[in-house]
Length: 205
Length: 205
Image (cartoon, rainbow over all chains, first blue to last red; front, side):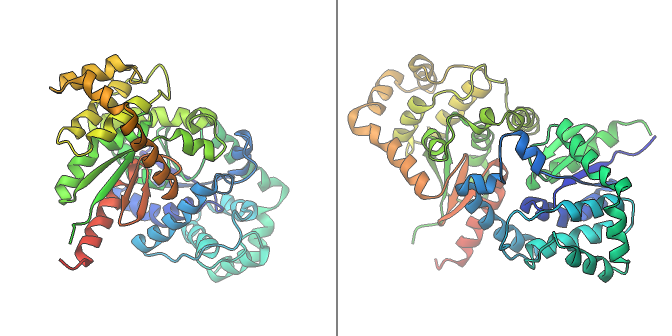
């Protein structure tokens, strides 16, 4: 039978997705749990809840706390942070590219590099040029990968993920899904890993 | 000089305040950090943000997740949980009582007992009888303590705490405040404790 997997659902526009994305591969590796990258878009999910913008903008008190918290978490986990001059940035293009890379061994590098561009270097990740440069820098042909990701046949991947995210009850990001169980938030990573461990122990092998 | 303290800001109506309140005394004791109980009301803070109800009711997807999460956390930390038939319950009376008990050695017992009544036993903690019975059960005169807590001279305590909570930037509960730094959420308890430890190490003694 297949081992217990952890699906990591993220949006490149989401600040706490950044914090989680920087850690999740190491956590899964340490626990010997296969990791599945699941890019999706929060926009339609916020709309579903009547929100026309990120809750961090709709509720400025929450937003102010989030930025301070992000600063602390970046310091705690040793990754770069510079408050983006625009938030949230459109993540559609970056997510479409991620959708066609999920089975590539360098997917994790792409994901982290895009997040660092957004939240560490204040770069415009909605720009084709920025993404192309990132992919080139990882030793792959940026322009043609982006063409492929935005082709008619591949555009549906991101829409399908977002629909599935809605079905799974998501209302924010990041999320981990293990054996049908949803874990929301950067701080739930450990609980998700523990859950996967317990499921794996119970499963007949 | 005075040691670094941890202020624990909570609302008896708040589900994640319950999860945190059940752990915070043990965590502070283990870290040798003095704990200050800070009851306050979320209602005025939600209103300030344009919310007429708990965000868990305003945003049902978030609410559905919260109740499942609470079930898991109760199992993880071994405390009782039964989904209350009414949420959120009015916590004004219970909080007024807590305000006059913060310096009593049995304050922690009162706090936990009220939370368990709300989220473990589905009791109406807005009721004078329920609270009086809890206090009696702890070996103190419930009726007269409630009279004292609701007297003209003491009613201002809760209002002052809630005003201070607003000044400190709070937008939800529970919160820890350490050396002016705000930590929101049940999952931030460890970070708050670590912060207090670091502040204590830096302070000249």
